[in-house]
Image 1 (spheres, rainbow, N blue to C red):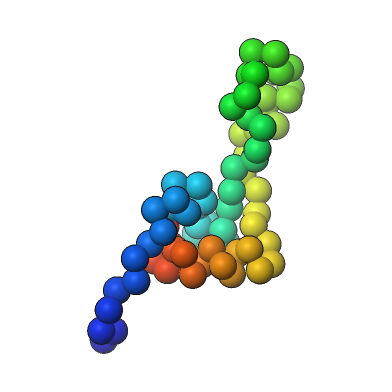
Image 2: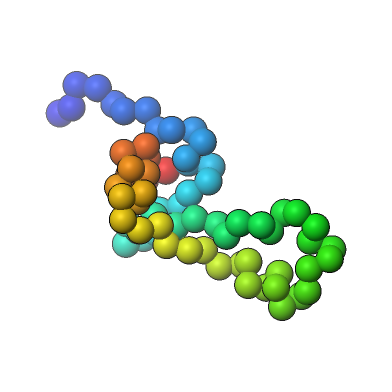
Length: 68
């Protein structure tokens, strides 16, 4: 059994998600500013999540050792 538990980074757990398969997902940017002016088609594009890849995903897994 491990001697210590690692704390989860509180900012990372609010901003990122871990999927069922263990992939790190993020929200798209530029959604909160001037939503009234944006087209409906543009706003619908913001609904999905994007995959975090490469070294960024590895660093986020260190910040969220228990899956966020």
